[in-house]
Length: 192
Image 1: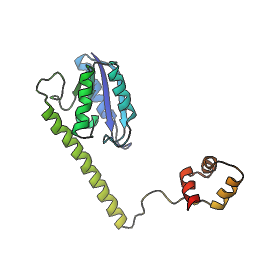
Image 2 (image 1 turned 90 degrees about the horizontal axis):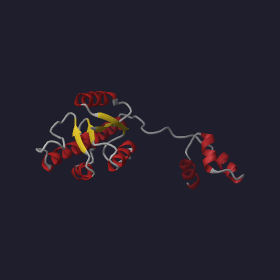
Image 3 (image 1 turned 180 degrees about the vertical axis):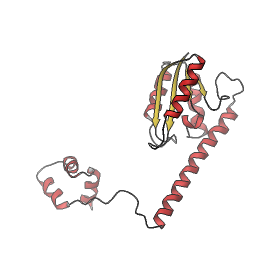
Image 4 (image 1 turned 60 degrees about the horizontal axis):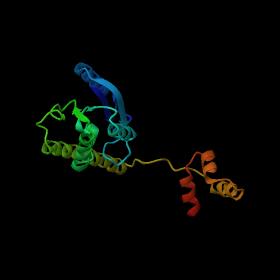
């Protein structure tokens, strides 16, 4: 069976090799041929684009593999019930099966899998994403209260130099590049 693997972690501090090693070993034990691996290092909340996820969906629509193997449902998506079920239904409409490694009951070959079970798991994954977000915001509030300055350091840019260079016809993008700041920052400062 032509199998694709999808792995995802939320941050660069996390490692995908744990997922990949287990998924590869499992596929080999089943006698499945791994034809593609898609790996994203980005939140699964749907707020940021996941390029490998999009490529995987494109390849699934073109039937480049027969089965998608992922570590767990929350590694596939944390976008909530409707979106997650939508992805799984898309696979079904393309005649592409799917299987969760850590949740073996989540398998298109298992007749016991129902929309109710998937709905509950998708809701749990979405709630986990919200909990992580709440903990992060609480940590940021605590850090601010303790006097920690958050965010990027304020860029020290002599706007007179920028204005002189603009008067000579240089583009903001070129000036920003030379100064090591963004063109958006220069635009904002010029407008102020």
